[in-house]
Length: 237
Image 1 (cartoon, one colour):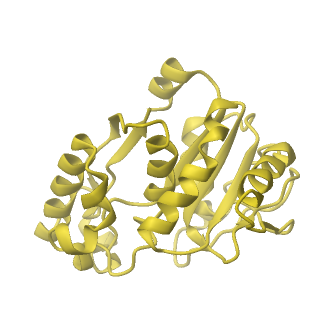
Image 2 (cartoon, rainbow, N blue to C red):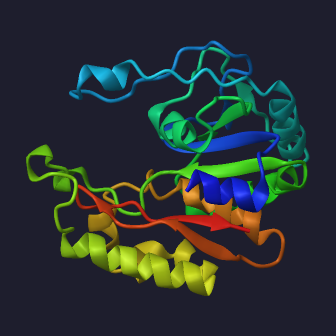
Protein backbone atom coordinates (compact mmCIF):
# COMPACT_ATOMS: atom_id res chain seq x y z
CA UNK A 1 0.00 0.00 0.00
CA UNK A 2 2.57 2.58 1.08
CA UNK A 3 4.98 1.39 -1.60
CA UNK A 4 2.32 1.86 -4.29
CA UNK A 5 1.58 5.41 -3.16
CA UNK A 6 5.27 6.28 -3.03
CA UNK A 7 5.85 4.81 -6.48
CA UNK A 8 2.99 6.87 -7.91
CA UNK A 9 3.56 10.20 -6.21
CA UNK A 10 6.83 10.04 -4.34
CA UNK A 11 7.11 11.40 -0.83
CA UNK A 12 4.84 14.42 -0.25
CA UNK A 13 6.05 17.72 1.14
CA UNK A 14 3.65 17.27 4.03
CA UNK A 15 0.38 15.60 5.01
CA UNK A 16 -2.95 17.19 5.89
CA UNK A 17 -4.82 14.53 7.86
CA UNK A 18 -8.56 14.51 8.49
CA UNK A 19 -9.48 11.78 10.97
CA UNK A 20 -12.85 10.48 12.12
CA UNK A 21 -11.70 11.01 15.69
CA UNK A 22 -11.55 14.79 15.85
CA UNK A 23 -14.74 16.80 15.55
CA UNK A 24 -14.31 20.47 16.42
CA UNK A 25 -15.94 23.66 15.20
CA UNK A 26 -14.67 26.11 14.08
CA UNK A 27 -12.14 24.36 11.89
CA UNK A 28 -9.12 23.58 14.03
CA UNK A 29 -5.60 22.37 13.36
CA UNK A 30 -3.35 20.32 15.59
CA UNK A 31 0.00 21.22 17.09
CA UNK A 32 2.45 22.68 14.58
CA UNK A 33 5.53 21.53 16.47
CA UNK A 34 6.97 18.07 16.97
CA UNK A 35 7.05 16.17 20.23
CA UNK A 36 3.39 16.61 21.19
CA UNK A 37 2.08 13.33 22.68
CA UNK A 38 -0.25 11.17 20.63
CA UNK A 39 -3.92 10.96 21.58
CA UNK A 40 -4.75 7.38 22.62
CA UNK A 41 -8.49 7.83 22.28
CA UNK A 42 -9.55 4.19 22.67
CA UNK A 43 -10.11 1.90 25.61
CA UNK A 44 -9.85 -1.76 26.57
CA UNK A 45 -7.08 -2.78 24.19
CA UNK A 46 -3.76 -4.52 24.99
CA UNK A 47 -1.10 -2.27 26.52
CA UNK A 48 1.12 -2.40 23.42
CA UNK A 49 -1.35 -0.17 21.56
CA UNK A 50 -0.85 2.57 24.15
CA UNK A 51 2.91 2.44 23.69
CA UNK A 52 2.95 3.27 19.96
CA UNK A 53 5.00 6.36 19.16
CA UNK A 54 5.02 8.49 16.02
CA UNK A 55 7.00 11.70 16.34
CA UNK A 56 6.47 13.29 12.95
CA UNK A 57 7.66 16.86 12.37
CA UNK A 58 5.12 19.62 12.77
CA UNK A 59 3.89 21.55 9.75
CA UNK A 60 3.60 25.25 10.67
CA UNK A 61 3.84 26.37 7.04
CA UNK A 62 0.96 24.08 6.13
CA UNK A 63 -1.09 25.50 9.00
CA UNK A 64 -0.49 28.98 7.63
CA UNK A 65 -1.55 27.86 4.15
CA UNK A 66 -4.77 26.35 5.52
CA UNK A 67 -5.49 29.60 7.35
CA UNK A 68 -4.85 31.62 4.19
CA UNK A 69 -7.11 29.50 1.99
CA UNK A 70 -10.01 29.45 4.43
CA UNK A 71 -9.64 33.13 5.32
CA UNK A 72 -10.50 33.94 1.71
CA UNK A 73 -14.09 32.99 2.61
CA UNK A 74 -13.98 34.70 5.98
CA UNK A 75 -13.41 31.53 7.98
CA UNK A 76 -11.17 31.57 11.03
CA UNK A 77 -8.98 28.57 11.82
CA UNK A 78 -8.26 27.77 15.45
CA UNK A 79 -4.83 26.40 16.37
CA UNK A 80 -4.76 23.82 19.16
CA UNK A 81 -1.07 23.56 20.02
CA UNK A 82 -1.77 20.94 22.70
CA UNK A 83 -3.48 18.56 20.29
CA UNK A 84 -1.44 15.56 19.15
CA UNK A 85 -2.32 13.08 16.43
CA UNK A 86 -5.11 10.65 17.32
CA UNK A 87 -5.15 7.00 16.31
CA UNK A 88 -7.19 7.73 13.20
CA UNK A 89 -4.21 9.80 12.07
CA UNK A 90 -1.11 7.99 13.25
CA UNK A 91 -2.20 4.39 12.52
CA UNK A 92 -2.18 4.86 8.71
CA UNK A 93 0.87 7.11 8.89
CA UNK A 94 2.89 4.44 10.69
CA UNK A 95 2.31 2.21 7.66
CA UNK A 96 2.71 4.87 4.98
CA UNK A 97 5.71 6.75 6.36
CA UNK A 98 7.24 4.54 9.07
CA UNK A 99 10.28 6.79 9.44
CA UNK A 100 8.00 9.63 10.61
CA UNK A 101 9.95 11.99 8.38
CA UNK A 102 7.02 13.76 6.68
CA UNK A 103 5.53 16.83 8.41
CA UNK A 104 1.92 16.24 9.48
CA UNK A 105 -0.93 18.57 10.36
CA UNK A 106 -4.30 17.28 11.52
CA UNK A 107 -7.48 19.16 10.62
CA UNK A 108 -10.71 18.78 12.58
CA UNK A 109 -14.09 17.85 11.17
CA UNK A 110 -16.10 21.05 11.74
CA UNK A 111 -19.32 19.31 10.68
CA UNK A 112 -20.57 15.91 9.54
CA UNK A 113 -22.55 17.38 6.66
CA UNK A 114 -21.28 15.83 3.39
CA UNK A 115 -21.83 18.95 1.26
CA UNK A 116 -20.08 21.28 3.69
CA UNK A 117 -17.13 18.91 4.00
CA UNK A 118 -16.87 18.58 0.22
CA UNK A 119 -16.88 22.36 -0.09
CA UNK A 120 -14.13 22.51 2.55
CA UNK A 121 -12.06 20.09 0.49
CA UNK A 122 -12.52 22.19 -2.64
CA UNK A 123 -11.21 25.25 -0.82
CA UNK A 124 -8.16 23.28 0.31
CA UNK A 125 -7.48 21.81 -3.15
CA UNK A 126 -4.63 24.24 -4.01
CA UNK A 127 -2.56 22.52 -1.32
CA UNK A 128 -2.26 19.49 -3.60
CA UNK A 129 -0.36 21.59 -6.13
CA UNK A 130 2.05 22.57 -3.35
CA UNK A 131 2.93 18.94 -2.60
CA UNK A 132 0.47 18.28 0.22
CA UNK A 133 -1.08 14.83 0.53
CA UNK A 134 -4.64 15.19 1.83
CA UNK A 135 -5.82 12.07 3.69
CA UNK A 136 -9.32 11.31 4.94
CA UNK A 137 -9.05 8.55 7.53
CA UNK A 138 -12.05 6.52 8.67
CA UNK A 139 -13.84 3.29 7.71
CA UNK A 140 -16.06 2.49 4.75
CA UNK A 141 -18.40 0.78 7.21
CA UNK A 142 -18.28 1.34 10.94
CA UNK A 143 -20.80 -0.23 13.29
CA UNK A 144 -19.07 -1.28 16.49
CA UNK A 145 -21.86 -3.72 17.30
CA UNK A 146 -20.18 -5.93 14.71
CA UNK A 147 -16.82 -5.74 16.45
CA UNK A 148 -16.31 -8.89 18.52
CA UNK A 149 -12.72 -9.87 19.34
CA UNK A 150 -13.87 -13.42 20.01
CA UNK A 151 -14.73 -13.96 16.34
CA UNK A 152 -11.34 -12.97 14.95
CA UNK A 153 -10.60 -10.30 12.32
CA UNK A 154 -11.48 -12.49 9.33
CA UNK A 155 -15.09 -13.21 10.29
CA UNK A 156 -17.57 -12.91 7.42
CA UNK A 157 -19.03 -9.40 7.33
CA UNK A 158 -22.71 -8.78 8.08
CA UNK A 159 -24.84 -8.30 4.98
CA UNK A 160 -25.30 -4.59 5.75
CA UNK A 161 -21.54 -4.10 5.73
CA UNK A 162 -20.95 -5.98 2.48
CA UNK A 163 -23.90 -4.28 0.75
CA UNK A 164 -22.74 -0.80 1.69
CA UNK A 165 -19.17 -1.68 0.71
CA UNK A 166 -20.34 -2.88 -2.72
CA UNK A 167 -22.37 0.29 -3.23
CA UNK A 168 -19.43 2.46 -2.19
CA UNK A 169 -17.08 0.63 -4.57
CA UNK A 170 -19.41 1.07 -7.55
CA UNK A 171 -20.35 4.66 -6.75
CA UNK A 172 -16.76 5.77 -6.22
CA UNK A 173 -15.67 4.00 -9.41
CA UNK A 174 -18.38 5.87 -11.32
CA UNK A 175 -17.36 9.18 -9.76
CA UNK A 176 -21.01 9.75 -8.84
CA UNK A 177 -20.58 12.60 -6.40
CA UNK A 178 -24.32 13.34 -6.20
CA UNK A 179 -25.03 9.82 -4.92
CA UNK A 180 -22.12 9.95 -2.50
CA UNK A 181 -23.39 13.22 -1.06
CA UNK A 182 -26.86 11.68 -0.61
CA UNK A 183 -25.55 8.38 0.79
CA UNK A 184 -28.11 8.31 3.61
CA UNK A 185 -30.92 7.86 1.07
CA UNK A 186 -29.15 6.10 -1.80
CA UNK A 187 -26.83 3.60 -0.13
CA UNK A 188 -28.21 0.28 1.14
CA UNK A 189 -28.26 -0.05 4.92
CA UNK A 190 -26.62 3.37 5.25
CA UNK A 191 -27.62 3.95 8.85
CA UNK A 192 -26.73 0.40 9.83
CA UNK A 193 -23.31 0.65 8.23
CA UNK A 194 -22.85 4.11 9.76
CA UNK A 195 -24.98 4.78 12.87
CA UNK A 196 -23.10 8.10 12.91
CA UNK A 197 -21.40 9.66 9.91
CA UNK A 198 -18.02 10.44 11.49
CA UNK A 199 -16.10 7.46 10.03
CA UNK A 200 -17.46 8.13 6.53
CA UNK A 201 -17.18 11.92 6.72
CA UNK A 202 -13.40 12.36 6.16
CA UNK A 203 -13.83 10.98 2.65
CA UNK A 204 -15.77 14.09 1.63
CA UNK A 205 -12.88 16.46 2.30
CA UNK A 206 -10.64 14.34 0.07
CA UNK A 207 -13.39 14.10 -2.56
CA UNK A 208 -13.81 17.86 -2.61
CA UNK A 209 -10.09 18.41 -3.07
CA UNK A 210 -10.01 15.90 -5.94
CA UNK A 211 -13.21 17.17 -7.55
CA UNK A 212 -11.84 20.71 -7.71
CA UNK A 213 -9.66 19.55 -10.60
CA UNK A 214 -12.79 18.79 -12.63
CA UNK A 215 -13.04 15.02 -12.24
CA UNK A 216 -12.58 12.29 -9.66
CA UNK A 217 -10.17 9.55 -10.70
CA UNK A 218 -10.15 6.75 -8.13
CA UNK A 219 -7.96 3.75 -7.46
CA UNK A 220 -8.69 1.17 -4.75
CA UNK A 221 -5.64 0.77 -2.52
CA UNK A 222 -7.07 -1.39 0.29
CA UNK A 223 -10.09 -3.68 0.35
CA UNK A 224 -11.51 -6.42 2.53
CA UNK A 225 -13.04 -6.55 5.98
CA UNK A 226 -11.73 -6.43 9.55
CA UNK A 227 -14.05 -7.74 12.25
CA UNK A 228 -16.91 -7.13 9.82
CA UNK A 229 -15.93 -3.52 9.08
CA UNK A 230 -15.03 -2.57 5.50
CA UNK A 231 -11.46 -1.33 5.13
CA UNK A 232 -11.95 -0.20 1.52
CA UNK A 233 -9.72 2.78 0.76
CA UNK A 234 -9.15 4.87 -2.33
CA UNK A 235 -6.41 6.95 -3.84
CA UNK A 236 -7.87 10.03 -5.54
CA UNK A 237 -5.92 11.61 -8.37
